[in-house]
Amino acid sequence: MPHRPLARALAALVAVVTAAFGAVLVPGTAQAAAVNYVALGDSYSSGVGAGPYDWSTCLRSQKSYAPLWAAAHGVTSFSFPACGGAVTADVLNNQVNALSSATTLVTITIGGNDAGFVDVITSCRFGSTSSCTNAVNTAKAFATSTLPGRLDATYAAIRNRAPNARLIVLGYPRLFETTSCGWLAMSTYKRTILNEAADVLASVISARATAAGATFADTRPYFAGHGVCAGDPWINDVSGLIEAYHPDSDGYRYGYLPALNAVTG
Image 1 (cartoon, rainbow, N blue to C red):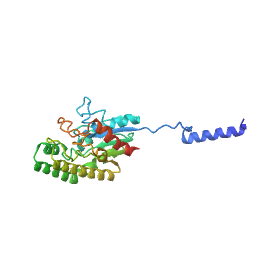
Image 2: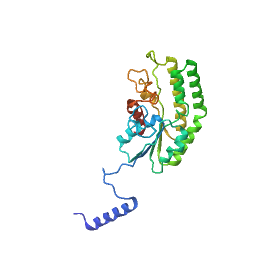
Image 3: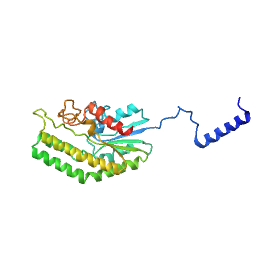
Image 4: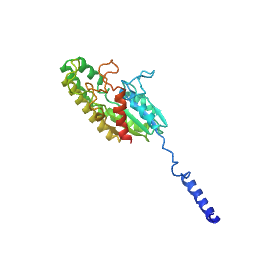
């Protein structure tokens, strides 16, 4: 039995420590930090291509990487304002309203629609080689001249609304394999220059994310060998005007989700 004066002294010491630093934690009982996650962005975040979709006009799918990550990590709260077709202005005007000082994690894909993703793909899939080349060159010029300022403003707004959050910016994959493909597919040349445009876009987004103090998650390595024309593609080809050239459910689960896991630990 401990000596009573000593026991009283130890009890008093515990009381002082508890008052100063909060409850004393017994090893193995520490509580995990709250994760309040908000997933912003465009169709590559909302899950276009994976389906099925919610009843909004944003085409949100629970098979996208964001809800998959939230479910796997048992987050405290999850908000999913990402919306198909979004440009940076939509994030600024609508989506950042979901953020607050309590937000601890933000992910986003954005910039592809600003650079004219739909018009470029349409020109290359259904137009001539020259129209495809012109569309790609126009998009690349926009990506290197105008897009950086838009990304800077977007990331700054996120920081302002969620000052305590970690910001993770995910990039876009290359959409195509350049190996032999069916006779209805785009030419190897068109697929090559579209992949080169994706590389330019990735470079710009990575640089601006880094400048903003965010983490860039490059998805290109995870989709390698799984683009359109692959034996096991994770990108939809022309399967409808909405889902064409977006990841399918495997693309989000085995491409985007591992890319996010790699930077979140």
